[in-house]
Image 1: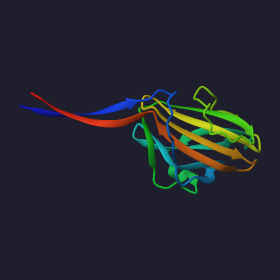
Image 2: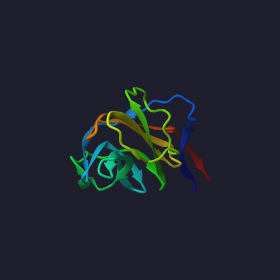
Image 3: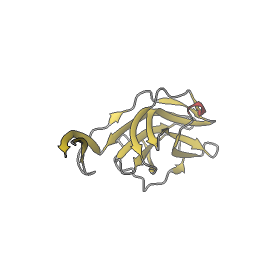
Amino acid sequence: MKYIITILIYLTFSSSNAFSATECPNVQYGLIVSSAATYSDCTVDLMGNPFYMHLSTFNSGNDIQISGNSIVSQYTPQPGAAINSGVSTGVVLVGLLNKGAGYTGDCPVVSSADPSEIPAVAGNVYCGIVESDPAGVNLWIRSTWNGTSFENTTIAYSSTMLPVKLQSFEID
């Protein structure tokens, strides 16, 4: 009896290699429950559930956090159809930095070693990252907090593991 086995081979890049990020569509400014938030249609698949990642305020607007939510109805307006930016087997790490007023960079230095909650300062740019465990997926959020809402948001994702080849072979 012969069996055909197909293997998906992954090419893994180290973080020092250049990569390109895919910008997430439908960036929105709204609310998550009753807190100001910015989010898009990009999700991280957490054990089969799409989690929309967002920046939001808490503590009466005095702090900003990076977080995720799978309950679409808690967003106003609601995000569109989920676009899976990566799959996690259960561990999603997040980090957030306040880059100050006038920051124009693309947030390359933020990591999950940074805190997930920091004080809100009007006029400052915030950079957040979502790092997914072995899948190697990163999702970045860059936004300005104007004191009452977020603005000038960019959300993008990249995978450091890219499927490059399907290899099939027969075994007896």
